[in-house]
Image (tube, chains in turn blue, red, green, brown):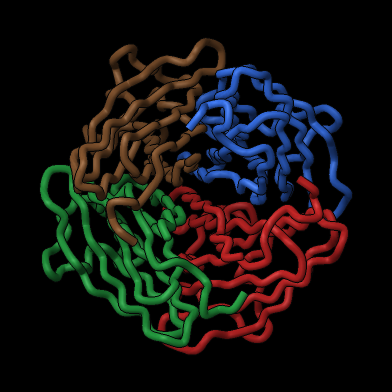
Length: 126
Length: 126
Length: 126
Length: 126
């Protein structure tokens, strides 16, 4: 497998929902939804993210760059341009990339007494 | 990737089991099994859900609509027609859609002192 | 999608490890590794499970039947013939089925003060 | 399915991040990121792991062997040659194998009062 071709250009995350509350010390125990991207190629990956909601039109594109041979783990809380994603709201995300990448989704929820984790591969649509 | 074709029309969730107990404040800390669907197309997605059990015939179809360019996160507890899914009972679900969608499954269990989360892509059967 | 053909005949679970300890009331809060199977076909699914270990030869086959149009969620603790799977030991499982099925894996670990959950699709090898 | 061909030769894990803190008794309640591999073939699997970071060049290859008909669950903390993976740091991993294998990823985080678990299939790139 040539590392220039590891991955796909379109990825989908469906169960987005940034938790409202956090407990514990910052930043290790903050609640967050996280987008994890790996770019194994020798070219910069130009990502374009569209956020879908339950009751209004999609928002985007949110641009994101991942340098060659780098991984980037971004909290959805930090996607603020063109518009911050509201907390405690159902959303989904479609990630389109200029080069093949691999995408995983992680939620950390510390809203009750202890940490809860959720992790899954995104769906690779092509 | 044309967003009219992102996803599949048949999805399967196997490990269903709505937790019996909840702790913490409502609604954020309720226990639930959740079906998360994204419809990126410009047409309404007409879903037909069949619930399979361990010891009796399947029940369904449960109809569910997802508007164009919308995501919908539905608790299995809220699927009550033709028949509510009993708590604390093993089940599985087959989701058929009129247009391509992406489906993820999330469980939140707050039955002990702190939240536990489980999340996974559904199996795309075609 | 004809429900006679939903799924695959070979599935793989890699991260098996039955937790040693449990806390909380039985049976809801027991620790366990669970194999979840859905058989949507009209024929009985005859499963043959092989358990792989880190330091000795594989054990099996463990037979398991899933009736037509039924789901079955089985704790690995309950697979005892030809030989019980030891607790607190790394293992993996290959599931072969006579008809197409869908397989998911769930771990519930209540060994500390609160429940932890892990869930993932098995790998469909064909 | 011939067990000589179960799996793939290239696997990708994206959301790596070894937790900084642990609570509870060792070793059952240590925090860790874990690579789980199953080799169902009759040949030794020679793995070559490359670790990608957010802000520097990839490190590797880390060699790892999995005997025929064995599973091996390795903590990323234990990959120390050519260089230990730092704690509390985002990383991703590409696993290349000489024979087909199946790879899953598990995180156990005991940094708060109770255990949190995350488990997902790795992405099979070919």
